[in-house]
Structures are given as C-alpha cells and as structure tokens.
Amino acid sequence: MRNEGSGMKDSAAAGNLRKLFLFFIFNSSLFVSVSGQAVVFSHPGGFYADTFSLSMHIDFAPQGAEGYAIHYTLDGGEPTECATRYEAPLPLSAACYSQSEAYKVKTVPDDRWFAPDSVERIIVVRAAAFDSNGYRCSPVTSHSYLIDSLLGRRISLPVVSVCADSLSLFDHDTGLFVPGWYHDPHYAYSTGNYFQKGRHWEREAAMGYYAPDGTALEQDCGLRAHGNSQRVLVQKGMSLYARNDYGERSFDYPFFGDRGRRNYRRLVLRPWSTSWSGAGVEDWLCQHLADSLRFDHLSTRPVVLFLNGEYWGIYFLEEKADEHYLEARHGVEADSVDLLAYWGSEVENGAAERWEHFYRWLEREGSDIGYIAAQVDTGAVMDYMLMQILILNDDWPVSNVRQWAAPQGRWRWIFFDADGALSSFPDNAAILDYMTYKASGAGSHTSHRSTLLFRRLFADRQFLERSMARLREVVDTRFSYSRSGALLRDIVAQVESEVPYQIRRFDKPSSMVKWRLSVSLIDDYLRTEPEAMVNEYAQYFGLEVPRDGSFAAYDRVGRQVLPAGSREVQMQALPKGVYFLRMAGGEIKKKEIKD
Image 1: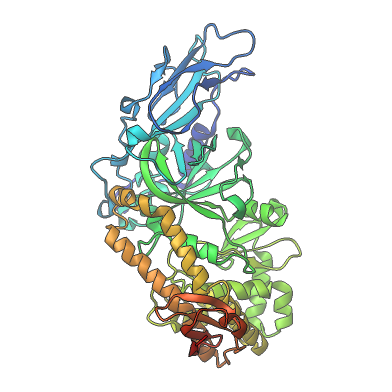
Image 2: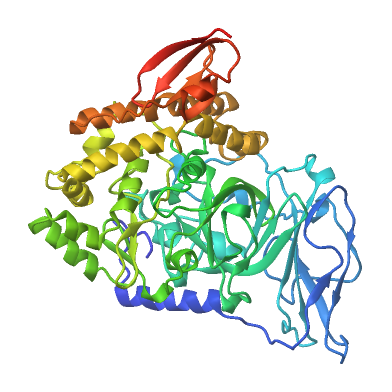
C-alpha cells in the first residue's frame, strides 16, 4: 500500500497477492544442493586480539572441487555468482568493513530520526560455492570477526551478529525496518513496513552469538521486526526464528546459563531504547526479581548487536513468550495451548472460546471464588498482580498481558515487558486505581475488561487477606533491598562500559550523567517503595499489615547488615553499635548493642 493522499488504497486482493509474492521471494531456498559440500573457513567467528589472513576452501564429497568456485560478500548480504571470487587468503583489516553504511538509511518518521556521524564496525564474511554455470550449490557459511586491534577495545558483553540482504531490511517495498510501502503520514506512528507481522514478513538471516569466553553459535534463522508501538524507534526490536527450513529447528546454546535451558525455538532482541526512563535495565531487573514467584517469566541477558557488521547498540537477548516457550517450560504441546493477549482480545495461539466463556460468567455473576479458582490459578494470578503493583508498572494492565491455558488446565500469566516499570506514579495508590477501574470504556492504561478478574478476586475477603500476607512475604524476601540492590548493581556492572557507545549510536540515553541519574532513581525506588506499598495496599483495602516480629537491620549510615526476616538472636551477633530495625510491619526501631 503506497501513500496517495490519505493513502493505503490498494485492494485487499492485491495486497494478499503482494504478500504471497514477498513470502516466496524471501523464504525460498534457491540453490542446488550437493550432499557433503560446504565452504569452510580457516578461523571460526568470534573475538580475536589482532588481525590475520582468512583462508577458505570447499569441503566437497570425494569427487573433488574442480569446476567450482567460492564467492563471498563483506556487507552482510548473501553471495551470488556476481560477488567477489575467492582467489587467495583474505587479510582481515578495516578494508574488509562493509561499505553499505546502512546506519544512514532512514528507518523512522522524520521527527524521530537520529544518525551518528559514524559507527563501529566488525568484519562479516559470507561465502558459498558456485558451479561453472553460476548456480549456488552449497549453503552460505557466515562468520563474524571482532578484532580488538581494529575496534580499539575489547567488548565485554556477548555479541550477536545478524546478517541479511539489504533488500530484506531496508528496501522501500520489502524491507523490515523502514516506513516503506505501508507507511501513511497521517498515521505516522502506527503504520509502516516495520508494523507488518506474520510469516510473509519473515526474512532469512544469519545469526552469530559470540561469548567473551570463546564459545559461539552460528546458524541461519528467520528474522522479523518485534514490538508494538516502539517499532518506530531507530533501534529496532527483532525476533529470531529457528526452523528446519533454515537448517536447524532450534538454537542450541545455553544463552542464559543456569537460569535457562539449552534449546530455544525463538528468541527476542529487545532494544535498550525501549526503556521509558533511559536507564535501560528495568526489564532485566524485574525478570530477575520475579525468580521463584508463581507465574511465568523470561530469561534475559544483555548483549551487543551488530547488524550487517555495523554497531547497533545494547540489546537484551530474551526468550520469546509464545507457545514454544510454554512447551519447553511446562511440557505441554505447543499446538494445544490457548495463548491470548490483551485479556483475550487477541489470539496468539489456539482459540479464545474458553476464556470468553469464563469472562462472560465473570460479567454476569463472578462472585463464586471456588469457580474462579477452578478456572484460574489464583496463586499465580496473585503473585502476578503483586509483582505489577510492586514495580508500579505504568504500561499495564491493558497492555503487556499474555495469558495461557493447556487443555483442561487453569489460566496462568506470563510476565514480560517491564520497560515502563520502577517509575513514578503520582502516588502509590495509582496502580491500585488502575487495577480496580470499573467504568465503561478505558482510562489511562486501564479498562473495565482488563480489571474485571481482579475486581472479582478483591471482592473475596479471604483472597484479599491472603494477598496481604503474600505481599508482606514477597517484600521481605524477593524485594528486600539487600537482594534488589545487589541485582541492580550487577546489571549496571555488566553494561556500564558499553553505555557510552549506545549513547553515541542512538542518543538514548542522551548522556552518561542522565543515565546514572536514571539508575540512581531506580536504586532509590528499590530502597523505599516496596515497603511503602505494603502500607498503601493495606490502607487501600482496609487490611491489617502482618506483623510477625521479624526485621531487617541497618547500621547508622543506612547499610543493610541483616536481611528481612532476621530475629533477635541474629542481632546479637553484630558488633557493638547503634542499629535501626525495619520491622515486618514497616515500623522503624532503634537498637543499641553494647557488648
């Protein structure tokens, strides 16, 4: 659909034909395969201290390689018979950098565009074998090289290198990351190629994951644009799809260490720029704070992304919250799961009939807590809502909701996208107002539909009292500052050296001073707001704050010396001095140890 006045005048039939054409062009394997042959590089992709010469050879079956040639590219695109022919070892130097300058391609509406004067680069080499008639007769081998002496530094984070033909990414008609054919200037922030979804907007790409310890994964995969309204950012979100069509059914690598598994069907690259505050770390922090709570959440880790050899900033590599995630986590069959978004308004897998039947019952009656508990995992939804309350998620409950149920199973929720969390509401009660909104239509980030289940649960006094006790427990354990502050310091230490490069590339955040200020505000939040929410929650619903005699202890300068849940016997083990105790109910007491 092209822009013509008010724009988008193509017929639906023409649009469907166009989609079929694009699907064929970008998802067909157009090469003749000969068993056993591939192009082999003398050096694997990854980190190197200094430059070297790269050799290539064809690893053919016993009949030999006569009549075949290697052609390679250095710009991230797939090689054709017109690409440079390999004749001799290739000295890897700055001369091997891509000359395409993709970072200058305008990928957003004019008023949101930003491009630096230059970008960092790495060397990406993609090669394939061709026969004497010019037909490609091998898969494409793709390696990326991060050479310290060329970069002038050693990147401390893992690196993800994504390579794809420029037409797949930036062409007006077919590119994933440009306003392009589907952009309407009258709806500048909700239209464009980057808002298109589905398999016909998936492009073949090569993905390399390079860890500083020398381990790596390199394979072909599918690439799509990712995200909702923030697709109009210069730093684009991306989804990676492993499929048999591309050679491997899964990404087989322990990306998340002990936190995750080893096989992933789909992955997400979440851009740093989606952070509302500019701190960049909110989602990572909240996913780790959610550990051991009774709902599904995602493994995530910071990486540096290079796109066709050009620096593309800090991203968070994350599990994709879809039916394959549920299959891996819970052992349910992906095809059998009902996975819904926006409280059933959007079906991502399966069907919405079960949920809609339950929702209509909630509207008509909804007072039988026993029936609700038979349909919904109330322990999971309790923890899920308490998590959103404690992080003051300003982009919920209408948005960023994904619920699922297996056949004959109860409904559960997946926690994702906390970019608007740990921010400032006018007061802590605002998030509770969001969750109890009951007017028809929609308010600011809330609606009658998105709060109905919570309102029915809050109407049950026993559920409210259990949630109050659970909130106290979560604040004293998962959200204790001794833990949450350590998590914040951990992620800051991981990314801090990379933030200046992110700033230069995308101007988000705009300076190190502003970034450190944003981080310090999160630190202040973690120190004070979870405890304040305990009292706010009790007051809002007319509940008593649980008091069990336990406490957290701090010295005179505010350093925590005993975690929440401590008792008097632990207190006596401290050196003599004056300490301040934060009791389980929020009260502060002074305690002096004399000997």
